[in-house]
Image 1 (cartoon, helix red, strand yellow):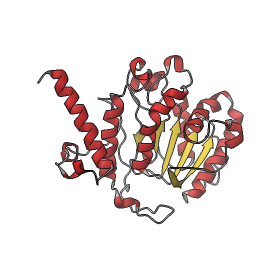
Image 2: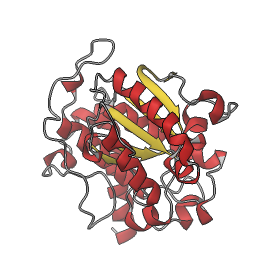
Image 3: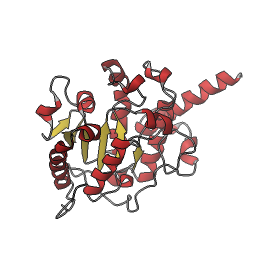
Length: 274
């Protein structure tokens, strides 16, 4: 067997094992022990080697209830992490749209695999493309402060993007690119099963909610996803927009406080100017 044939077989095996993890009723799920499941647990979901990654939030194994009463502990943190890691490997080799050819590396996402809160942005910028991590530039610093204002840390939430590869010149992702990546994002949501999602910016809103409404008409309005009716969704402005329009921070803070009330997080008496 040649090296290329071996690589192709390995890639197919990873894909099949990932599908078996998502859909246990498939015959493959009972045909063999997954080699991924036998590996030592890791604490990162980015496909980039050498990055320190994100540690699981202590207490992430606690039992949480979905709005419908379903026990979220039915998929423990390690199981979710294995599934995310398998999906990450598939994303790393994806060439379903032209962005796969121009990127430096895919930016899968990072955070607690059992996070109650998930943030979805637009796509990687230059710094994210270089590091393989989402939201690490100036907009990422502001997002970290926004999360901190909610009384949380980045390690306690999950952060992803509508597209996993950087568009050339940091342009807005096109419809074809968003559509090519959407099934990966839906799988991330399906694995993590958060209680709430914050959509950051117009691209995330177009990808997940509607192609017809500008952000100004849906920002701050509670929404839901057809595939995940139990998850509450808050559309709001992207941190990059806030860097250009700091007066909009008060609107975003109002939106985040609403999300905090959904998750029964304590509201700070004075968030300051975070």
